[in-house]
Image (cartoon, rainbow, N blue to C red; front, side, top):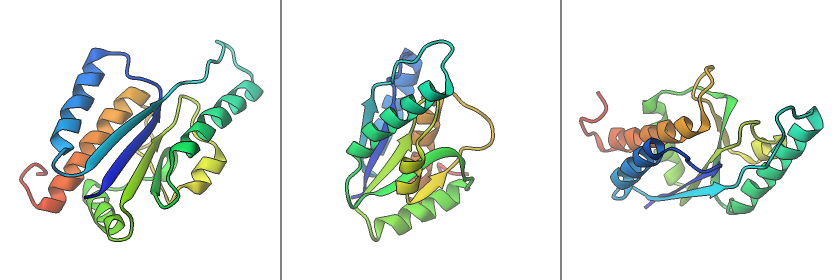
Length: 159
């Protein structure tokens, strides 16, 4: 069974985001081993300088890198990533499962991911050109993972 780690910066503050994550986590139990690893956000002032932002991105990315296993397949969620369909995500996960036992999906903080972390990734995935709150991205990612597994099983969930 494939292990999926969602490694993300920040905790879900609102109950409705937590409820949505719990629902998709429950649905995914028979499909994969799912771990959601929340790492703390770096504190940054209201008017951060470019150096402050760079320090934040570096610190958060270093903590993420520490959670990635040596043989894990890493997918970085980033705006410059590739847009793919749900069917393509399903096929990619199926293909990855043939060579890897663990997939790490990375959701960075508000300021993004470091180049080092992006370079460590095996694939860069984008949810589109629009900007979404990181909490919503986590829910959207879980729904798409669930959908991808359902496509792979040939169920009616994906219409």
